[in-house]
Length: 201
Length: 250
Image (tube, rainbow over all chains, first blue to last red; front, side, top):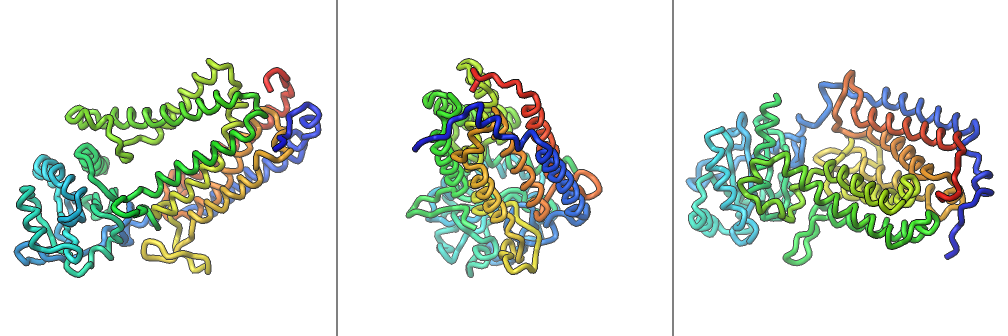
């Protein structure tokens, strides 16, 4: 394909940028920009979506009540006030198995600082027995909950296994890691981020 | 929303794939018109490759510096291919720094090189909008307008779609094959692209539900985009006014 060549004739013909039209266009752009910035101001107290509930960064984590191994119903609200890591997993998913030991190590290191971990087994795609065996095999010490009806899959719009949500002490989602296995380094940096943000406040 | 593309047992991160495709298509478009800028195709390809490599290395380096203690405990993570362990702005800084040095060593004109890279940036801008659509990030305010989309539990302004349409329109307007683009002075194509993109960014940011606020409700990203736009418009005027055009630098 023939390409247009640059030459001084063309350049001298190109007066758009050097004439008054350009100055006018620039002025209009800059002035319109300022007007729009003014018009699209936001209420400083209402900006953000921290009062809305959705499974995405910036939103309040959707509430749930799920049974634990003992059958006791555990509410996500019980964890308000502490940073929380929620991991969605199944026993047949290799990346879930691969990342769980790292989660256990990080949990052991940070649990005294108030960090909480919950592993929610997507039981409607798994079996409770296999999930309990999985926990025993990997010596997991943090609680596992059972999503028997697919409530969490729907509420948290599960797209891939594993998926991990990092939630601050106010119940706001700070990070979502979809897929895995998550490295221990990644896990630690995300946990440190939550603690840093808590420190900032 | 499609953050993950499941192909059999493989779960592919859609945003990464879209951005890579954007860079590749942009590179094809830039290469097609590269002769216009008197940059040898091989040097241009090397430059883009250098941008990518130094961007990746820089992004990891800056991330490691931020979390040095954690990486010190597990040094192998430094070479992990995990895309979550990157600092984007560190990558951008390193890419441009490395590109600047390479360009200087090969006698490339800064403005000509930026002009040559503009089609890549224009295509990448569309890809960024698509990646945001895939992840559901940069979502809009709730709206009753008929073109609102349901996202995160509300009918919202489809800001990501506005972004894609806007970026595609800018690429159409500034398509490198157009005669008026060929006739521009060095740097003007790049600066014009940045100016228009900033103006459009100021516009769509007004529909975003989440923004950082400087003061009195003014959004930080709009203020920054306005300053970039003003600086680019001013620089275009300076370039055009100076008229000190050196034909040897074409």
